[in-house]
Amino acid sequence: MTTKSILCVGVGVPGLPEGWEVIQADTPTQARRHAQARPCAVGLLLVREADQCEALHAFLQDHWTMRWIAVLPPALLEQPAWRQLLRDHCDDYHTWPVDSQRLRHALGHALGMAALREDVLAPPASDATLTGHSAAITRLRRQIGKVAAASAPVLIWGESGSGKELAAQAVHAHSPRRKGPFVPINCGAIPAALIQSELFGHERGAFTGAARDKRGLIESAQGGSVFLDEIGDLPMELQANLLRFLQEKTIYRVGGTRSIAVDARVIAASHVNLEEAVRRGAFREDLYYRLNVLALEVPSLRERREDLLPLAEHFFRTYSSERAPRVKGFSSRAAQAIRDHDWPGNVRELINRVRRAMVMAEGRLILPRDLGLAPAAPGAGPLLLDDVRIRAERDAIDASLLRAGSNITLAARDLGVSRMTLYRLLAKHGITAPSRIGYTDGQSE
Image 1 (cartoon, rainbow, N blue to C red):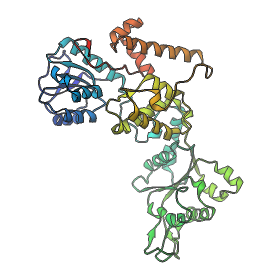
Image 2 (cartoon, one colour; image 1 turned 90 degrees about the horizontal axis):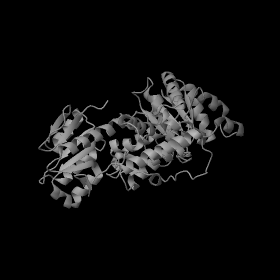
Image 3 (cartoon, rainbow, N blue to C red; image 1 turned 60 degrees about the horizontal axis):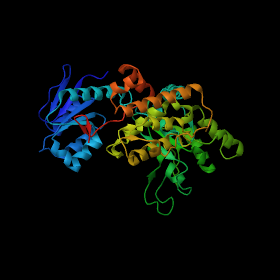
Image 4 (cartoon, rainbow, N blue to C red; image 1 turned 135 degrees about the vertical axis):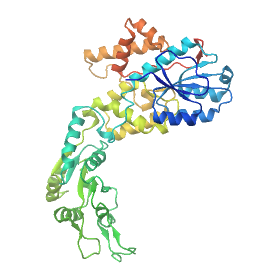
C-alpha cells in the first residue's frame, strides 16, 4: 500500500496536510541519495529562479516512475526549457506563492494514481519471458523448476521469437551449474565451413591460419551449460560429433588426436518439429532421442494473452532510457490494441513494438499508432456481449476523465459512482488518467 511519504526537492517546503511524511532534499544530489534509501511514489519539486534546469531535468529523467508536482516562480514559465521540463516530467505545476488547498488536492490525486500503478512498477522478474500469471507460463515455470534440478539434456521447442533462449537461461540459473558459464550458440548463424572449429575447437596447424590452439564453444562451457539454439540447422556430419559428446562427454578438436573431457550440460532448442525432421531424414534419429530426454515447450503469446500487458510494462521499464522524456506509459486504447493483436513474432515482436513506441510517441501516453497497431475495425469479427460491455465501460471512463480534466472527484460524479469505485474501475481496466499540466489557479495556460 502506498504510504503518504513525499520527496521534496528544493528549499522552502510549503505547508502539507497532516499525515504526510516529508523527506527533505535541498539539492538533486541529496535527492538521489534519499530516493535510493527511501523510495517514494510522489515528489514535490520546489524551484527557485537560481536553480539549474539541466540538473533537475537529469534528475527527473532518472526518477521517471515517481509522480512529480512542481512549484516554481511565474517568471520561469516564460522560458522554453522550464516549460519543456514541466511537459516532460510533471503531472501538475503551481506557482509561488502556493495555494495550499490546490496543492493538497494535487498531491492526493498523485498519490491515488501512484497506488494504481504499484503492481506494474514492482521489481521485474529476472526472467522476462516468464513474467505473467497465465496457465501456460505458470506451467512452464513449474516445469523449469523440475528440469533444472536434473543433469540430463533438455530440448526446448517454441515458435520463433517466443523466448527459448531465456527459458534456457532460466534452466541454467536454477540448476546446480548456475555458478558455471552459460554459453549460447546459434547453430544457424555460424558458416558451415567454420562450425566444426567453432564448436569443438582446433589444434595449431590443423588448417591454414590455425596459428595456435583454440578452445571450442562446447569446451568453454566446462562446468556450466551449453545452449544449442536452432539445433535443427546443424549439418548432418556435425550431428554425429555432437552425439558422441552426449554419449561419452568427450570431444576431439579439429586436427587433434586426443580426447578432451568436457563436463557441460546440453540445452538445445528448435522452432521446427525435430520429429518431422527425423522422418524427412534431415535430423539424426539417435541424436533426437539423446536430446529429447527432458522436453519443454515455450508458449506463444497467443496462448498467454493475460501476460501481454505485464510483459509490455516490463519492457517499457527495461528500455526506459530510450524513451522520450514525456512518455509515461500506455493509454487504455494502446493496452486494448496489445490485447487484440495476434503477435506472430511473439516476445521479440512485442519488444520491438514497445521500443519503437517509446521513441515515436508524441504525447505522454503511448497510442495504438505508436505501436504500429490499428484498432480493430468495426465488424472485423464477432464480439461477445461481455466484450462489448467491457469496452463500453472503458470508453465511458475515458470520456468522463477527459471532460473532468483528470479530476477524479468530478469524473466519479459524472459517472454516478464513488471515488473509490472509480479507482477500482481504473485498476480493473488498466487505465492511467491523462495528466493535466500547464495550468495555474485553475486556469489552463
